[in-house]
Image (tube, rainbow, N blue to C red; front, side, top):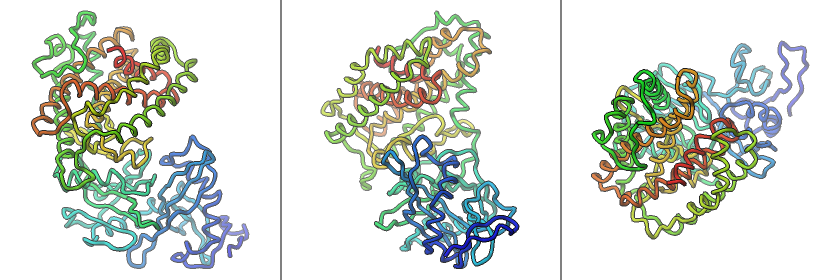
Length: 543
């Protein structure tokens, strides 16, 4: 039974348990105390906790398991966090016991005494000894692991030993550890009762398809829950030395492009324009545009289009593993799509109506247009006639944007196949038109252009309206060139994405879906930026 200790000790420990650490999780009193306010208080402060906008009701222990090597024992916990709004989320947290008072001061969960030894329960990821155990268990994984905690490794993960480990840095939803400055182990914090798509896609692309432009899969940790379902806890990949992500790279490039307007004395009103979704080669871009923007940004877009096409070719050329075989459009997919989008659209309509008072200028005009044309937008979502679509659906990246791409010299590496954060795990695995990824990237280009304008307004001599106009002209050339390269690559590999008319329909559909999705975030977090998705919506509904 837990006993209160006197507070005369060097540091106040409220609980003493007369059991060995290796048996602590079997102690009902400990579990009860641990799951009460103590853990709740700790979890809500964590960056990876995704329930901040909801009201937490209580936490239950869904699963616990040992992560151990010989005598060294840690516990992995899967916590079910229940909310007053009648839904729940699962989180993974490994725990360790430390008795050194100077240790892990920021990550202590509970002061505790075990068999009269005082110390703290902490998040084990802070402990180098724990990180080393996980690394060595993956490295020595057997080909067929039948135990409840399953360590897996790729045949290519050999001839190395543990040297060092450190946190990778600023991450939101997961925690990544860099080992030996060569490998990255991503611990998934938010857990789903299924294999994580990031694990499935990473393993498939690098082991089955030998796709070189994603970090190579090296291993994973899975557990089998009480219903015998495989749950991914961690994913090990090679570390790609890089020059940063494509979002930062694009912002730097675009700043040069916008600075050139003044430097080259460009008359924005005289810049030649191109039509939306016309496929372009580099020779189709007018000299005035090349003179203004430079060749570099266009050659980078071509390379990115090529890598994106190669990813889709790898994902679309599987005929044995049913999780990855291409499939046709059908009625079931259509029902799923429409239900999802109409629900999301209604939610965003309410957001716009409730946040109109925060908007001004162009954003307010576009928001009013959005409300006036809501029936037209709704109709566009409903008018999805699968019988007219001849292309195929594939497993896709699902959350493809410039922040998910690393730049390495003149090349690009694609990361993070977890899928859209708001979607359920099942929805993330639904096969989609590959143009959904392309649309995600196009929205990211659009964002990068506007972010550059917003972030540097005082540095440019042109007014915001003129800069927006130049940005929209550039955007159409960027996506035209991307499409020109992407479609040729895809068709040469016999991946069926439909004819021109179908492609334009799907692109418009996916761009509209993505911009509506973004609108919710912007209205809640930074209303000034709501102009970006609103302009994206306007571009589609007025063409």
